Image (cartoon, rainbow, N blue to C red; front, side, top):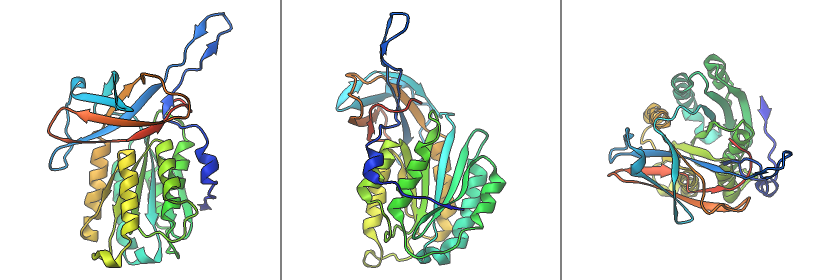
Length: 307
């Protein structure tokens, strides 16, 4: 097991974002000029009024806007087969202890169903610190065995879990979908990172955040609604979602919803016009011409590592 060290949020955030596919600009050795072309890729989940994926949409039904300006969509891939890199973060704080066995059993089934050839998953637990239990692998048995090493701890480093999950994914090769799945009661007590650092890290790394909030206490007065709101905000920024099962027995169904959504996403790509300066924060909006709801990331940072 490895407890991850938290880098200073400000220093890491100052690095370039990993959301574009750049071709270097400048003078070539043969005397010809080459230009920089940045292809922005956006994953979108399209759902009907019942929350079921909407399939078989065509390119003319999508519109993409950057900074309020409509862009020309150059690529659309329905039910994208782009491989997954996913960090599964399990809250092992004492407040979650009585649900831990059920959570790990549901997570084991999720891993069995989700991980396909080419996909990779890394497993983490978090309480007062964030601990990596298994590195990125496609070996389902290895991941399931790692779940058995989760032990309860004091405190809940919720923002650190999001921050370090995004940081870990950003270090992986580009050209793969990046996803964080977080199972927690949304408590926050011991993080070094704050909400803004966690949100920025998730946006900068171009991850989708899916949170399953297991609420042991139903009344708002007895639970951490601030943590719930924070997870909802970050999920909305990244194009992910937050789920609130009414009973712990529904946890497996929540995992199934995430798996289904990841297998039915649309991937859109465009060349931004006008081209943004390097390192700029750019707002995004995806619109779909149908009676449905679309979820996609709301922003990206220009420049950085290509995919």
